[in-house]
Amino acid sequence: MKSTIMRIALFAILLFPLVTASSYSATEQRTALVIGNSSYSTGSLETPANDADDMAAALKRLGFDLILKKNAAKEEMEDAIRDLGDRLKKGGVGLFFYAGHGVQVAGKNYLLPIGTRIYREADVKNRAVGAEMVLDEMGNAGNNMNIMILDACRDNPLGKSFRAAYRGLAIISSAPRGTWVSYSAGPGNVAADGRGRNSPYTVSLIKHMRTPGLSIEEVFKKVRQDMGMVTKGQQIPWELPSLEGQFYFSPMDVKATAHMTEMVNREQAKKDLGNYESLVPASERGSRYKESAKQVDIKATDGRFLAYTDGTVLDTKTNLMWAEKDNGSDINWTNAKSYCENYRGGGYSDWRMPTQDELAMLHDESKSHKATQMDRAVYLTELIQLSTCCPWASETRGSEAALFLFGSGNRLWLHQSFTNNYRALPVRSGK
Image 1 (cartoon, helix red, strand yellow):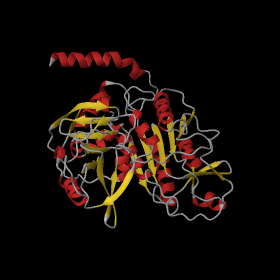
Image 2 (cartoon, one colour):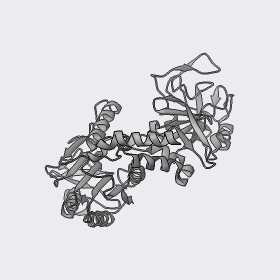
Image 3 (cartoon, helix red, strand yellow):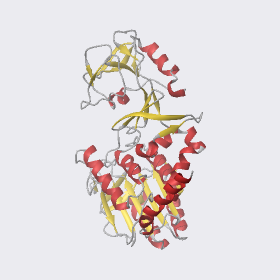
Image 4 (cartoon, one colour):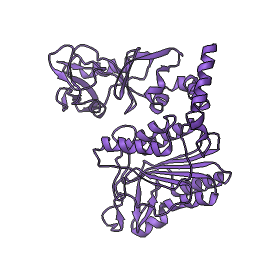
C-alpha cells in the first residue's frame, strides 16, 4: 500500500509542470455542442450521426457538458447554437463539432440541416445554417477559449446547377481571439465519409483527444499525420489557430488519470464495452470489463487488432468484434447464419453473420498466413484464424448468398445450399 502511494506521489511531482503550464485549466468549465446530420433526402451520409454520438461520448469523458443534436432541422440547429452561446457567457472553454454536409457559396460556409428543400443558390443562404453564426455566438460570449471543428467537407450535394457552390469549404479569414478552427479537409477539398461506423477524421481525432498530455496543437498534428497515411495524401486537415495559451483535452495529471481509471470500472463501462473500447486508446485499456465484472486481458496485438483471452478479437478501426476463428467445418449458408446468431463467444449474445463489406474491411494484402485446413494463403490479421479462405456473408439474392474470398479479395455469390470450403465467422458490433 505504501509503495503504491509513493508511486502516485512521484507521478504527481513529475507531472506538475505539465499541469501548471496550461493557460486553460482542466477544472475550468467546458461546454460542447455536437451536431451530426446523416438523413438527407438527397446525398444521405452513413457516418455523421455515429460521429456525433461517439464524439459526444468522448467529450463527456473529458469533462465537457454536452448539447447533442442528430439529424437536426434548421431551427433546431440554430436554437442549439444560441444555447451554446448563452452557456459560454458563464466562461470556460467552448467547443462546436459538426459532421454532415457543408457547402460554400460566395466564399461563405453553410451547414446543411435535415428536411430543408434547396432549389437555388439563394435558398442556401436562407435555409441552411451559416458557420459564421457559431463564431458570432462564441465571440459574443466573451469566454476564454473556443474550438470549432467541421467534419463537413463532403462533396456538394446540391447538384451542378449551383454554380457558386464549390467543392469543400472556404477557409474562414478571421475568427474571434482565442479560437481554434479546424476543417477535416483543406480549402476546396472534399472529406471522406468513411466505410465503417465513423469518418476517418473523427476516428483519429477521438483517439488523440483521449491521449493524456497532448496539447491541442499536438492532437491535430497527429490527426493530420493519420489522415495523410489513411488517404495517401488525398485529405489533409486544415487549422486556423488564434490561441494565446496551452490547452489539453486530456491533461496528464493525477486527477485526470484517476478519472480514467474510474471510468473503466463504472457500471456503464461494464455494460457497454464497445463504447469504452472505441474511445479509449489500446495503450490505456490493458484489460476490459463485461457485465459479469470478470476481467478479460489482452493476449496479443496486431496493429489495430486486439485479441482477448476470451476468444474475441476487437478491430479498433471499425469497432467490430470478431470470433478469433471460424466454425471449422464445411457449412451451408442457412446453417452458417444460425451458427453466428447462436454463437456465445466472450459471453455475448448479439453475434451475427457479417456483411461482405465488413469482411472486406478485414482483407489486408500486407498480412498473409495459411488457412488451417488448406495449403493456401489468406490475407488478414493472424489473430483471426480461418480454416479455409471463404466465410459466408449475410446478403442474399433469391437462392444465392454472398461470400468473401480472403485468398483473392474477391466477392462471390453462390447457391445457399453449397458447403465446400465455406465457413461461418461471427461478428458483433461494439455499440
